[in-house]
Image 1 (cartoon, rainbow, N blue to C red):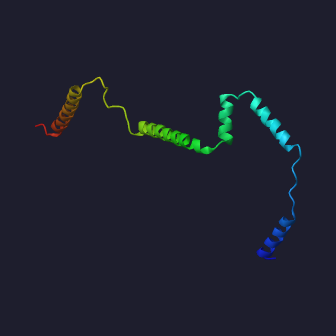
Image 2 (cartoon, helix red, strand yellow):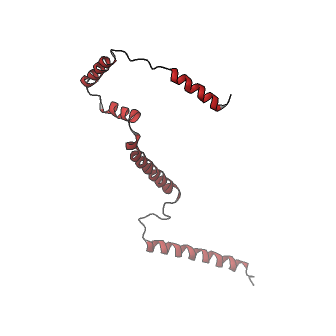
Amino acid sequence: MSDEQAMKEMMALLDDWKAPEPSPWFDGKMMARFREETQRPPESLFARLRDRWLFGNSNFMKPVMVGSLALLLVGVGGGYLEMTHLSAPAYPASISATVQDLQILDNNDQAIQGMSQLLDDDSPQG
């Protein structure tokens, strides 16, 4: 059976199909439900937000989702930067730069003195 033949048979079946008539009380029942809904007390804020989230148009949520994602990326990126690229200073912040330089020179002087003692010990004593 070809697709064209199957389509013709389906269309013939649809031509013979009759839609059922709605109940004569349909309009009255629908209006009664509308009245019940309008007389019902308003829902809480959270229930309305839940309903809007589940059943509403999602176009209003797109900017909210983009903003949330941007904040998440900034937070994660900042945390990563803090953990990997920023380190504690080598010297406490209370020591001035001049004192740090003098400490470096003193360490260098001690290293030079140690090297000269080693060289003096290697020389023949005569």
